[in-house]
Image 1 (tube, helix red, strand yellow):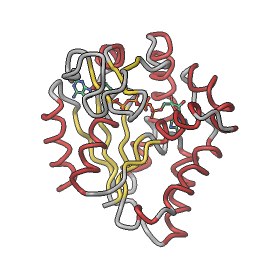
Image 2 (tube, protein in one colour; image 1 turned 180 degrees about the vertical axis):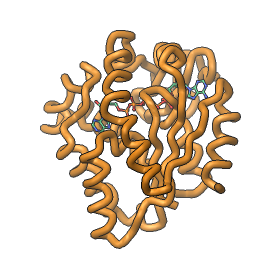
Image 3 (tube, protein in one colour; image 1 turned 120 degrees about the vertical axis):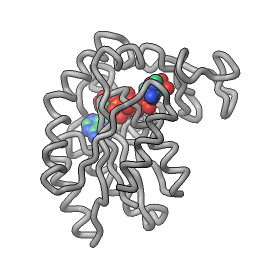
Length: 214
Ligand code: AP5
């Protein structure tokens, strides 16, 4: 299965992608996570994008397209993949179509998780992430059983630098202007499925599952 997960920042793409990836045994490709790893390792790309990400803006199309091209060529993507956070602009979607056509494959479905802006602010201000393994929690909706430490690996949980309210609002604006138009792009290819994000994580997962079967 080859999937794209769309949705505003904090809509739950990473949370649901993690579940779908495990269920279908396909890799989850998060451009945000790859960029944060580059930032932590202080690679030339990481240094270049740090201020852009902290400000809540988008990294240039050519950088993320190059990341995804390299990742999709890895052997673990042969049986499918789930793209989380890519594409985010129409030029990225067009570059992906071109790349996949060169590889002789195509996206099966595009699922957009729909959540209102005020709920997003609540979700992101309660988000905690593991600085080592990247696992995501929420202080109210998905707390770690180990308090401020990660359930999965025991390392410390932190607040992401772009999860401050002013930056969240900027990310939402970028989403509405540049990423939301992708819904029409994929609807025109008859691949789009909308999933209304629920307050309960498991309820959203059940709706995702239905959208994938459909
Ligand atoms: P990225 O890491 O992709 O961030 P994002 O899209 O803003 O998405 P988030 O990771 O913030 O949220 P999510 O939808 O995964 O939600 P989550 O599951 O964590 O990108 C970061 C930055 O990198 C971008 O701003 C940009 O600068 C750059 N970038 C990345 N890709 C790029 C690209 N293609 N082009 C250009 N630049 C790019 O859930 C959020 C919280 O809510 C969690 O705490 C979770 O536990 C909780 N939660 C989840 N589901 C529910 C639920 N149903 N009910 C209640 N709480 C829930």
